[in-house]
Image 1 (cartoon, helix red, strand yellow):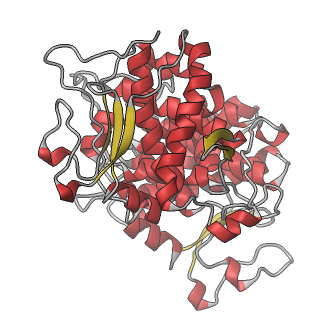
Image 2 (cartoon, rainbow, N blue to C red; image 1 turned 30 degrees about the vertical axis):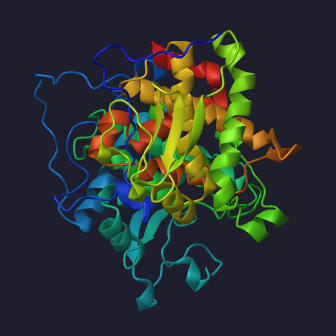
Length: 486
């Protein structure tokens, strides 16, 4: 029989405080008013290793002094320094990854769509609409071009300079493909370019660039950028202009970030698996979301069904169901008691309470906002994280600290993968299968951004770190999450 671990005497139990910042989920990664985003030392809490087992609480401050390049002060300086950094990276990296010498592009071409003076690319005339809010590598002319009137200023203002750098690094991925002669399906070339961009970002994060450096928040900015540039839900991977969902694009970027450029080389030959969830007729009717009143109860039922099946193989012994779960409404004052929670801890929150072995959530502010602004899987991600805390308690695993929180995200990823295939549950005496819809995985990405902010990042991890842990569980199953226990 599984036993629910209780907190040690005097230990403050883990409460994942969730601020309701979902009106604009991507704003969690936006540049602050205090200055530029491209500055400061490396921002990965794992030190750029990418190892799940090394996701631990932040280490003590180092006494080593390093010279950090000054932050670019303008959009023009950002583009110039990014181009210099990307070209320097590929001059060094391309011979190692492909055995080919790097040759710089013939030109870089910022353009103003409203002027009508647009760069030509080959003998075929490009439609005018292709130039607006776009950036591209022109193979016939061997140049990189971008909309300097709408796209880049908009990214710079709304999200910060690393969003601009990300676009350029992606286009240089296509430059690399041209240098090497890479061919393959369109979406694989796009995802490979994202992977190459991740390899470059890791080099900057590790201090490899003489002109740029990252600071905390930049990698979350990359996640936000991929939400902005994702394909619409239900886009076929075989579509000629497909670039990938936010889930696939962030996945590719992280593979390059943690594995380096050599990891990206196998993409066109099938080295990357696109997660394709087709758009159904029912999705068109419902928008792909469960009705709000049914979302939390049905997803809670799938979590119980999943862990009843998955727990024994991973942790041994039978799964003991969560003692209870349900909503509360902060304005009523009728709040579930839990040791360590004060009156101000309930609004905008969801938590697993080990004292009573239950999961509770704010159904007045938090869940309606998540469902309305992002979608039903954003609600599901919160529930899955808190159910994972209950699983950790049953398995006798640590429940506090950054590694424990990332493990919970990993376990949530394993449940999400099962949801992709469908989880049968009993509803009103009959069986019903709950399955992911098109766009749900991008809702998970947006959810990680919505739970942002410096305080939450220190406690639970950045959106970049949390998504990496989530993918470990999604692709590796619950057993992969044991690596976070050390």
